[in-house]
Length: 110
Image 1 (tube, rainbow, N blue to C red):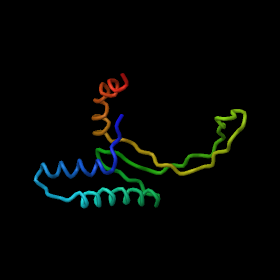
Image 2 (cartoon, rainbow, N blue to C red):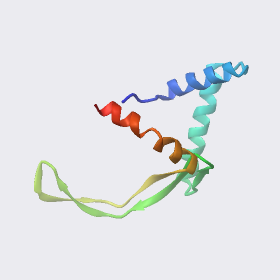
Image 3 (cartoon, one colour):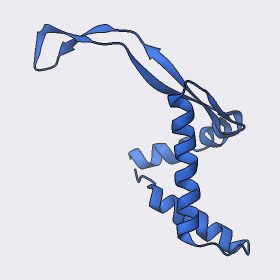
Image 4 (cartoon, rainbow, N blue to C red):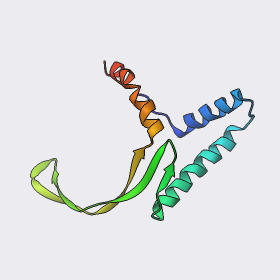
């Protein structure tokens, strides 16, 4: 399954805007995309949630400490410390669009 890189995202956005008659340099789109990512990251690092209507919401949750197993030696317990993790909850529009793509996912597996 192919991945979309930040570079590919910048190229796609630049192309789409060009088709709409908006002339913008790839460097400017790169700056906007990176600024967007930085703002989300900074907000989450400050304990804020980020909600983007119809896309989804990012929030920081605490993962409690737990005891794991060493895969090389399952008889040994490995303590895993508590940590903060980012959780994402997809918005309604995204859920609907992704749900309609189930047949594509199944075709890629075969």
